[in-house]
Length: 58
Image (cartoon, rainbow, N blue to C red; front, side, top):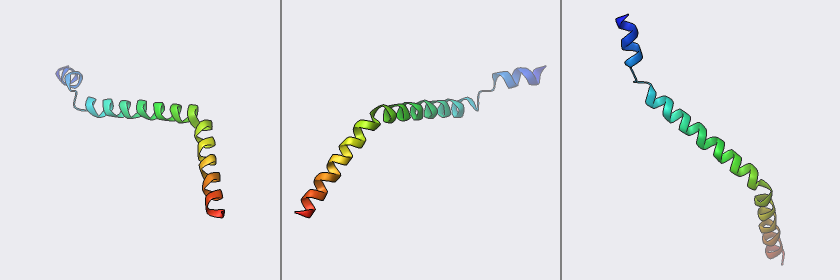
């Protein structure tokens, strides 16, 4: 019973788990943001590529 109480009170792995959860949350937020802005970013990069091609070609 004493070992069980010690195990319950032991929080040595809690910090690693918390950092893992934070990293997962940041990853999900980043993927969501990139997905939401994906079309606009692609359009912008295509426009820049076209302008560069035109500038180099002339």
